[in-house]
Length: 87
Image (cartoon, rainbow, N blue to C red):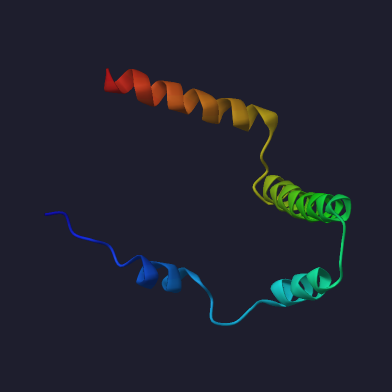
């Protein structure tokens, strides 16, 4: 007989006991009656914000590690070499 997972226990483990500042602000926002269009616009704003943060972090990594487009090409070729060595 397969073991049953206690899904309630698993779900509780994933839920933080304290809300983050962002979560609290979003809850305040949702207390206002916003339209579906506004919700989509807010989601887009958040997505763009976090995409910009990721892009800035990558730019900083490139600068601090002296990465170049050639480095990226070399990295893609390393995967090919690893596969050739396995056969």
